[in-house]
Image (tube, rainbow, N blue to C red; front, side, top):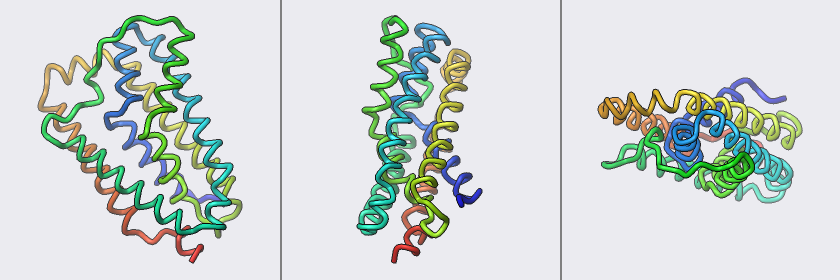
Length: 216
């Protein structure tokens, strides 16, 4: 059975990812500011579908990967930690971009909004790494069916991701305006998120998780 610790851990990782700059966040915030909240929410529906596609693909193969090639698990673990460190560096480096710094976009219809949200998510390496290399680390083969654990953890990822992005969509105008008027708070946001991601990366890279221990 999946533990509350695993659910809380994956939720915190996803929250950290949501709050850091990335293609999904920049697109959704930009779309909301340019075309309104409704357009942002339609785009978010497409992003959510992209999340689901990744989840189903990873959940279908997670048991096989664990059972046959545990070394792949270790490689994915290190890749995930490395990617988190890269995101942390992008957040804190001089001239780093805040997630609330929007781009100018031309208005689109609902169909294109949904499709662009879906494609933005599907082609987002940040999401791919999250589902492929980070999600498996919270699965414990000793805790029952690993595919079901992966599915439940993935649904947690989707719930946190959709809720976090929806918050930014609803508050996009006021948040962007606030950070635009207060660059010090924008830098503080980047440093806090970068530090949090770096801490997650170090913990993931150095911790001997239950999944690894059970496979060896």
